[in-house]
Amino acid sequence: MSKPNFEAVKQKVKAWTKRNRLNLFLLDILEAINPILRGVANYFRHAAVKHTLHYLTWYSWWRVMRWIRAKHPHANWTWLRRRYFGKDRISEAGVTLYRPDSVPVTEYKYRGSKIPTPWDTATALG
Image (cartoon, rainbow, N blue to C red):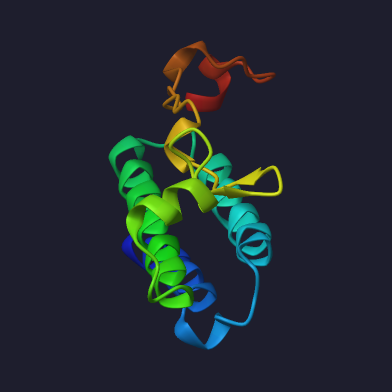
């Protein structure tokens, strides 16, 4: 994943979790962020991006947590955990924050000369 692509994804997540969106419900935020994270993870799953997807998981989790803390400034962690966490995942109404690092990453392997071709290589080179 190139740096501009990665920065664009981070900016999208950041835009949805800014303080000017505190009037929304967590469900709205999750429904907006999850397709972004899922799309990036599925698009780049054939590249060597496991560490990048892990960092994106961490980044999105902290951005959403900061948004929750800003939405409930006087709440403590115990109340937040009871209110917003499922099984150690941020969730509301059955929708959980998507984890991009849960996508299995398989590198695309170039097969070299094993790729079948309809042309004869002897006549193509000669």
